[in-house]
Amino acid sequence: MMFQFEFLASLLLVIFPLFFFFLKTSSFTQLRKIKKSSSSSSSQITTTTKFPKSYPLLGQSIAISANQERFNQWATQLLQDSPNGNILLHRPLGHLQLVTTNPANVQHILKNEFNLYPKGDFFRDTLTNFLGDGIFNADGDNWRFQRQISSHEFNTKSLRKFIETVVEDEVFDRLLPLLSEAASNNYVLDLQDILQRFTFDNVCKIAFGYDPACLSSSFPQPRSEFAEAFEAATQLSSERFHYIFPPLWKLKRALDIGSEKRLREANATVREFATKVVREKRRELEEKKSSLETQDLLSRILNSGHSDERFATDMVISFILAGRDTTSAALIWFFLLVSRNPRVEEELMKELKEKPESLDYDHVKHVVYTHAAICETMRLYPPVPNDTKFAAADNVLPDGTFVKKGAGVTYFPYAMGRMEKIWGKDCMEFRPERWLEKEETETQNSPSAGKLKFVGKDPYTYPVFQGGPRICLGKDMAFLQMQRIVAGVMQKYRVVPAEKEFDPLFVSYLSSKMKGGFPVRIEERK
Image 1 (cartoon, rainbow, N blue to C red):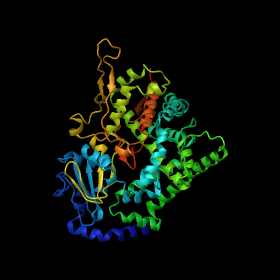
Image 2: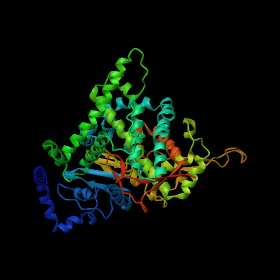
Image 3: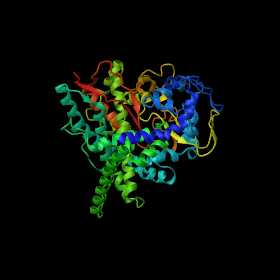
Image 4: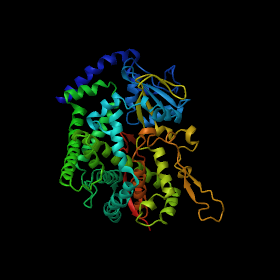
């Protein structure tokens, strides 16, 4: 009965705009072929000739929705076919979304005209139920305050503590024993789930001084209610962006039906967990107020004098999202790509076998080839494949593209990593060497002669961590964590996909994932 009611409500909401749509099409067959049809390009932007048609009220939302699961791949193909690396998508009700792969445009929106391109009301409205006013959903003074208070978490002292205590304990006490058991018993693990548990424990320990022990010696075990709810909240919140007719999800929310009911229930579980963490930390601080020793992020938030419980809860959820999903997303593709490229694996082992089993802060910073391989992984499979800002006023981008006030402007790291104009004809190859060059020394007899050094790219050619004022605060922490995990795992084990010719689908909600997980077997190195 409830399904029928939800269907009727949805039908009533979309039937009016669909009336205009069917005036444009002669059959349902044409509807299925929209994504293959073409239209004239906008007068303000040159686009691919294979572009889908735009229809009254709906714009190109039917084609976009039809490609929802493969949006990154679909949009990348359109961008690769575009003469200037831009496309203009027509969203419902006349909303425009410019998608760009031009590094100069990226620098313009992320740095040069930062104040002109905020997150915007549309983004905040869509994600407020999940993220509240947390740092990833904030603009203006609210964002600046959260940025300032969070920045203390990423100084050298905190990073050293993170790698030498938090990550080290999680690697040796939980991850490696689990992999050893899997290798001994030859059973299949979902590495995506394992790494999400690992990174969830890490972010909770370093940011909140709390150990959820999500990855434990009693594994395998079902994921916690919180983990299931967080996954659901992430996916369902993301799906709001892809509705053919956006007011539909608001109607479903008002009626508390379907996906919006599930999202409300998932959000309630997530907030209950985050609020519990905040209250326990507040109680801990009250008990220790005469001799305060805790220096984690949550302690600083609660001692700031500017935050209530809801505000602190919003920040907890945002940091869990950042720390749990992005790092694990990069690592699963790293281990898959290494398993497909024996030459890269050999080079990694040459470097890692020269390092001690327990890499401290100073050692882990100098695994140059490992660092390059991780960067190369994220070039092809960025944890956040695209990000959108909204123009607060009319503007012209460096390549001459006009942006109308209120339009969304999306920079697209996933597509940028696949553009020949940026990375050359071998852009689809996994080649860590593109990030390396030989050290220049005064004499050939110098000890450093012939050694490789890492050469980074500017954050607008490689915007995996954003750029400008909103550049990711956790960039260095993420690299340290990933390098430590890679070293700890690869010095002892090989990660082998459990399925022959394993070809997973890259999907993204608020961050990227392998659809269906990453089933692997663990083999001990001889």
